[in-house]
Length: 377
Ligand SMILES: *[C@@H]1O[C@H](CO)[C@@H](O)[C@H](O)[C@H]1NC(C)=O
Ligand SMILES: *[C@@H]1O[C@H](CO)[C@@H](O)[C@H](O)[C@H]1NC(C)=O
Ligand SMILES: *[C@@H]1O[C@H](CO)[C@@H](O)[C@H](O)[C@H]1NC(C)=O
Ligand SMILES: *[C@@H]1O[C@H](CO)[C@@H](O)[C@H](O)[C@H]1NC(C)=O
Ligand SMILES: *[C@@H]1O[C@H](CO)[C@@H](O)[C@H](O)[C@H]1NC(C)=O
Ligand SMILES: *[C@@H]1O[C@H](CO)[C@@H](O)[C@H](O)[C@H]1NC(C)=O
Ligand SMILES: *[C@@H]1O[C@H](CO)[C@@H](O)[C@H](O)[C@H]1NC(C)=O
Ligand SMILES: *[C@@H]1O[C@H](CO)[C@@H](O)[C@H](O)[C@H]1NC(C)=O
Image (cartoon, protein in one colour):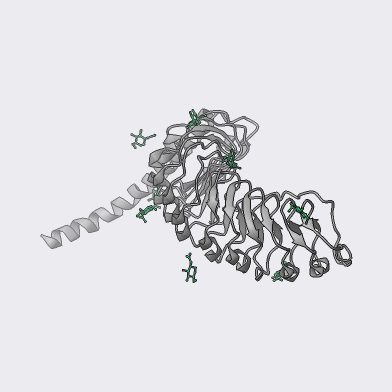
């Protein structure tokens, strides 16, 4: 019996090889025709994707297409192409898609459900489009996602708790949408998250959930203007990778946790426009700090001498508080300081004589930093 099978295998194998080859070719042709159909049904303007017209070039060489080592389509990058149609239902017939990047189009309608069928997807960027409505509850079908960028759309409602199941997620951007419900504590389950951008949404008033303390890899915690109240939790100071913290324009109250000024990697700390009170922490060891903005709060006491240790500081704003005392001389010696705002306080004494001699001061306006998202999968 066994030898019979072996023998028949020996005979069949050579026959199988060409069959496999022609299967591959068939798959390739299939992917090519899916792409051509996609271009048509997505209403791609003829001024884009010109390389697609050639019959001779392999589709892996077409503009906006990425292929894996085996020659199967792995990425669709249709950026800033003026697309106004909905995402075609058959997009995931491209079985090996790991990346869909549709940033900067005019795609209307709800979250494109067909995309949920792309089970291998790792990177999804739908930012800067015209999407409306809710994030679907079964977003966690995209279990392999590393990057989810929904920023700069008009999504609304709640953030579904299932988002916390996307365990490989490293970048989550919900920036500048119309979310008007709640966000779930399950976001704290995203233990690989490095970028959490929720800023500029009208979420229901909420505290910063303690469950978020589990996301210890977060580097950029961008929670500006999302209706937060309560205290700044002490655990934030434990995020040792954090380089950018923005909690501005919320209703946060209480003292600034002392350990925020001990964060070794922190470069930007924006806490302006809150109701923070008490003194600014005295012990200052955040030596990489480049920008501190504590303006428009209810802070009292004096400006800590230790600020003068922050040799990389370019921007210091503490205006519109209730600070008293003198401006530490050491601040005048900072070599890179270009922007300092301390007006509308109760400060006394003279301006440090050295101020402006060691660095070139710019006008006294707030410098809004252009923040560009850099993806690194
Ligand atoms: C997807 O990738 C797998 C593994 O590399 C391969 O066997 C399969 O043929 C590919 N599918 C398509 C449609 O190319
Ligand atoms: C996903 O794929 C299944 C079968 O492959 C299909 O029945 C379903 O309609 C697809 N869903 C969407 C939203 O395209
Ligand atoms: C949230 O916004 C959507 C879309 O604008 C709206 O239909 C809905 O009623 C709003 N929900 C609440 C709770 O305000
Ligand atoms: C996710 O978070 C919720 C609430 O924070 C928690 O109850 C649940 O056990 C977590 N799930 C996992 C898989 O960690
Ligand atoms: C702060 O809370 C008040 C009501 O308590 C509300 O009117 C205001 O919009 C809130 N501000 C911010 C920035 O969330
Ligand atoms: C912060 O970290 C320290 C040690 O690294 C630990 O003892 C402490 O419990 C942590 N605090 C919080 C609030 O997680
Ligand atoms: C300050 O900036 C320089 C140059 O960007 C960098 O090499 C250095 O590590 C930073 N931090 C400190 C504490 O000087
Ligand atoms: C500033 O100081 C004066 C006199 O010391 C005091 O009357 C005033 O209330 C203070 N203003 C603020 C905003 O603290």
